[in-house]
Image (cartoon, rainbow, N blue to C red; front, side, top):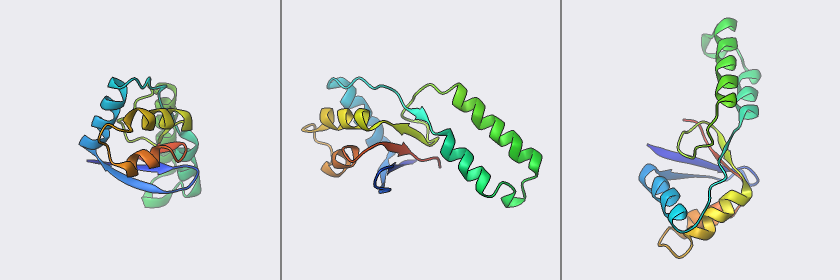
Length: 124
């Protein structure tokens, strides 16, 4: 599995391999990064559903149940960085992560990307 990450401010998207992303999270923490946690981006999820709620032959009831499921996920969100559920890494948190990865052998493109703004971990 790979992670699709999008900078909210620039709309730039990169793909990071699963092992690289998990190692970056681990290495940043070992170097002193204190993750603040992600927030579930329910607005994006609901916006997608509201644009075309009945596409793919979904019945209105199935669409409503899906929205309820996403609201429940929002209410129970644990702030993780590894589920691919449209969660947001704040700009400050992404910048601190980049700071603690710099000089640890990680791809400069990933570090520059983390310094570019708030990051969405896209759903698959």
